[in-house]
Length: 231
Picture (cartoon, one colour):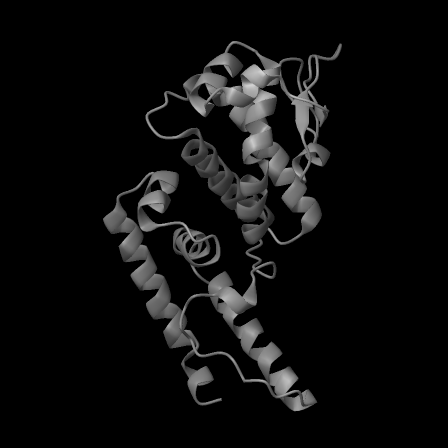
């Protein structure tokens, strides 16, 4: 990924489950997030809004603390929407790059978590559109929450295993076929377990709009998967 002198780069390796900090700017003017042993007690006690305000003043350690707090949730959201692990790492990196560049626009009207999750959703959708991919293989199939009666029970025969896999694939394909906005609310509600109020804040729409999109999505999914009830 090419960067201009004023662009900031976040290392994807720092976003996969360990503490990290933002190191000093390199000669090229880039900023990298790398492994970091200990955070200061002051930063660990600061709330997100305080850290965001400090980050807006180019306090790299403050932004490192924000990454540390939210990297797992951001990675989880993105990985549900972008199946390829390498693409997921790239998108997560882009999320934090964009967040760092835009941190001055964070006004604290919503929580920092809501703000960065919205960036994560929008960045993932943008990636999918650009790549013309709508993959959902990373979805935890056993927790769809759609009440579609997909289980075949405890049978262990090869035939039953094949049938169950076909059912799971049908659900993945059906979710994949949804329009972006409807697919996103399904992912956030049923796979990430966000409330409709939280989804509304993340997506920048009303709760009523979230309910409407969920209703449309579930109706379409059940229509597409009707055959599973008799399979």
